[in-house]
Length: 326
Ligand code: NAD
Image 1: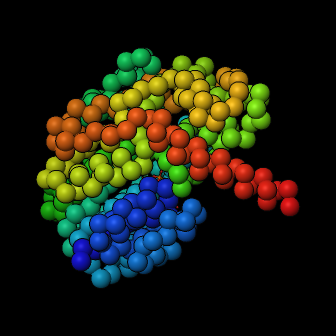
Image 2 (image 1 turned 30 degrees about the vertical axis):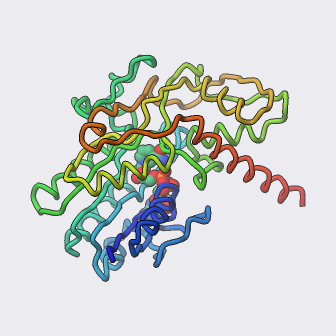
């Protein structure tokens, strides 16, 4: 039986990845500084531990692993990453996790390690035109990410690839573009745009108004979690190291995205654009490389994943309001 270690298994993507690996017959250990809050707790073994501590990283490798997935990071949506207030924490915490997990995996003789980078590492100068952003893998340099989160991702991509070159451990690097779905952060300040949009719409009364950050003309693409995991697994099974985009090419303006969620809810809701942290003006995945190397592209349109996500978040909103009424 193959053994996999998922670092960040208490989080959104890590929790879903544990389920995916279990469904493929792996024995899985998860590790995170917190439990998975959303019920994705199917790991054979789950260790509560701080990966900034090299002793914890060494200890979780015990028993040996064929594959390690390093997803642990200090991260959040625009309200966490783009305000500047959390820059030191993001860089310090994520860099330590990445350094320690990789070194421990190398020492423990792990065959393959996956690292989750982000589209936030792409240069801002290629993402100023909302209708024509450029995010081909080859456009990463000269580097100019618009956030410290992006700079840390770039550093860690290079760190992982240098271990492959110098020390022989197989490395796989994916650049995720806005992954969303049920069982993820939907409130509290670290939620990302799809979850925030669903929550705002679910909380608004019929005939009410939701606030959307920026002028609403900024563009993004969003990828449903199951599609992301299919890309991750294909990358892991291939002889290609990346870095490679795992995202959707279905670009949408933020106001049109809000209208999509409103349409799913069936309510009549107005949009009010207000100043707020936005990140780059435009971003879209470029899937030419992943299609060529792994034959992968998303299998369903954005709206299908958003229907499932809205259903899950509106239920959470309802449960919360029932608790508050008690
Ligand atoms: P998440 O915040 O839900 O999961 C990250 C997990 O890492 C959390 O459970 C957190 O507790 C854990 N963690 C943080 N510091 C830790 C520490 N010191 N020790 C142990 N665990 C620690 O985020 P996610 O959306 O699941 O993202 C997973 C990975 O994918 C992250 O590396 C993120 O940067 C990357 N990524 C995600 C997206 C996205 O759209 N969700 C986009 C690009 C990249």
